[in-house]
Image (cartoon, rainbow, N blue to C red; front, side, top):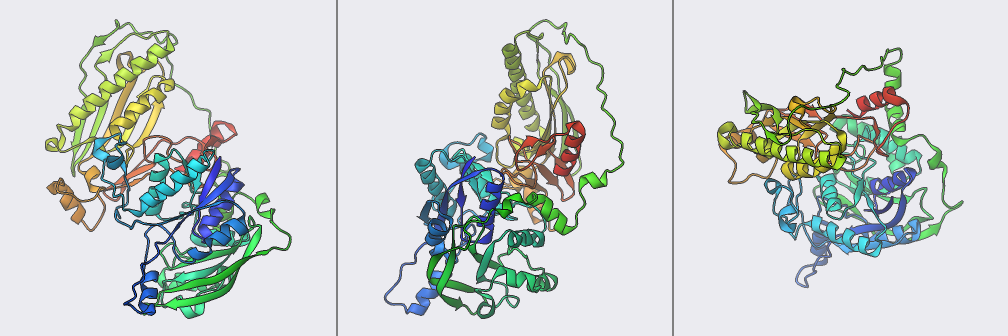
Length: 549
């Protein structure tokens, strides 16, 4: 894919570019959100103005050394640069960002949350929209997110609105120490331009120091041991500026810098003057021939591979249950049989709803399109039954957003695409349930039906994960006040990465309730960075599924 890179100037954003190129994607341009320029007042001294400028913070974007970006991208990297001055601020600071109510695009009204046009995320949307207009061939976006769910979910939200694929190849790839070592080994040369970790990092001592010097001297390791320091700076301990990388045509040279520190131990390196300098030997391509990044990170960390772990384990060929070869159904067409689902309510507001079937039963059709349309009609009836069931659970307080896990059974997997559109409309795309979809074969479901659904429901969990409001009932309020465990947490990653397969539909990778019960989505043997089935047959795919899980 042709992609635009979101760059801050730091190591993570540029290393994600390098990794995307290694995965076969083509860099077209870079985008950068510059910090808002402060309005200077003639009644305030220059020192106060300086402090005001440096205190402008963002939850989303690195602001330190932004002044070097034009030289860094256009001269050193050699690609077009698009810059937008950030006008918004961090207004919506909830974990999940949803523009749906403002745009009118929400698939599920229960998921809709008002978006603030003055939020800094909307600046990112406008930036990427302008880049896509200038370069319509762009279909993907890279970012340097490693651990920040806050940052990743907002980028994914914007990409969804613009029909762009988010690429986050550094996301949870492994221990931070191993990742940083790989960056340095691949030729990322960077210096610290912001420190916010006293007493471990001191502005006058550590600003403008190289990452390599601080890492290989063991300073970061000592800070990790003493203060639980994030070695990649994921806790905000430091920010960096890349001076050179193997994909750079020229090297950035800092000619004049100024250290600005504050009373609370935070310091920033302001670059007053810089230039691009020709490199000896030009672009270095040695990084392309190295082993895959996720393998190198595991090797440095000392993890064993799944091949080593299952060495000698016998895997037998699976046997399938006998099935009716004809797949015939003796039921007459369009018979309605009312079938009530099984409902088991457990302690703590947990419920299991199973055997949700359509009341419509029809004979199989030899025409594939007719069969698919009949499957859609059944699915719509199933969703209607589930909605009615939820409305009667827990005194009528349950809703589709409280469903944490779905088992979807289909008679034919070819019906999945058409059904999935209506599934998305019912459950929404914000914090959806985990899902396992299984094709069981024609005639295998009760009454020759084509669709069946089971699900787990946790009362109040949908409202619990959204911003508090007057609509919250006492159950949700008590859950929020519980200091021991979360009522529900959702892992919903939509960026391509080395970590795990991206969610390609309206489901989450995992939902955890009460801090200990996790419902995982169904897995197949997909290679995460390429999203293709790995070679080697079902045994290799089974091992890959274990790895993904």
